[in-house]
Image (cartoon, rainbow, N blue to C red; front, side):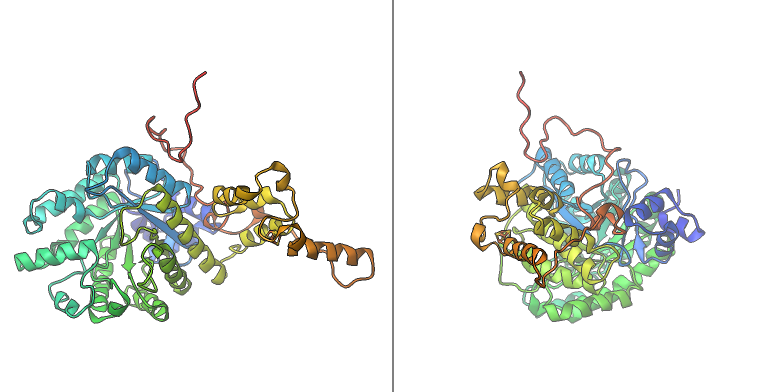
Length: 483
Ligand code: SF4
């Protein structure tokens, strides 16, 4: 079966393109053109039956990826499915299963089966678990792992094919060396075997596997900077040049491509990094990790990175890989997934508003109107994280009567500026005053915004997703007690 890219080039608007156009509120023919030109990707493995297709490209709403996955120290299927559903519930547009521990096959298979969003992986991680020493990874093993994951229905894979022998010496003198897991594994393999990166030498064979299943490349930035001091250095940009060549090779095989980006970058260099990638990789969608704009805030790196992510999306990055508060410190749990996603949905939406994406600001306007009208229930419903907004409000004013109140506990009844302003306007209306009532209403039903830009976020068509196994309680809800 041809890939989305091949069909787009033939002039066919596929069912996935139709669905994407519906979600983005645009013409299906526009989606086809963007995919045909490599400016957008629709990661859709032929074998991912529960998928609700989505698009990644700078002409569409900014997307957010959530990394999930088990580690050697923490791994069980129940927790992983809980993370998957937390991620989807709080608005992830794609998820990456970065598992390095537990039964990798079982976890991956379950993630694909129960996910309505595209699932990405990093196959080198599985290859490492199949050998005693990294140097023992063979070309055949790598291709076997990649093919196996493609057959399981993985929609996109991070392939660190740009880490080459020639580039490694360029990382000498860095403050934090090679910080990408995949990048460091491949650097070790190259050093110990004295041979070129097998993902680079076997790239065309990988393209053939990807073309057969319509797996999208996420060309990994294995030499991405791990601190501000290493940002925008020779190693990073040499690898980027190789990723540009590989992008064109993959396109020649009819395979869709995204390109991954840094890492840690000072705020003033973020836009230049995005523009450079767009130029070197001929507009292939840029998928950035953050970037963190300062290194000093472990425990708060969902914030340091969301600042960089907003700037990156402003400059043209198409998808943002979230960072959780646990970054650099430990494996995120479901609550960290929620916090990371909130930070990144904010970044993506703020960039879409700033970029003037059609209808993007309707959500803000609707919430502001509800806020000014003291329509607390509507304000909660429209919030990016409705449960969090309601919980914070109700911590101090839990009663139902306070859902109609013309104040909250922040300023209190006497000092509520919005109540005072409304009273002043009403008094002016009754007399000869100058203030006029504010009377406005934004109808979100009619908004031309893409689904990712309208509440509730995280709405995917889950009709093809099977019921969850009994043991999973995705959002911490109690099972109703038996009578
Ligand atoms: S009390 Fe203050 S924070 Fe609360 S609604 Fe009024 S103006 Fe807003």
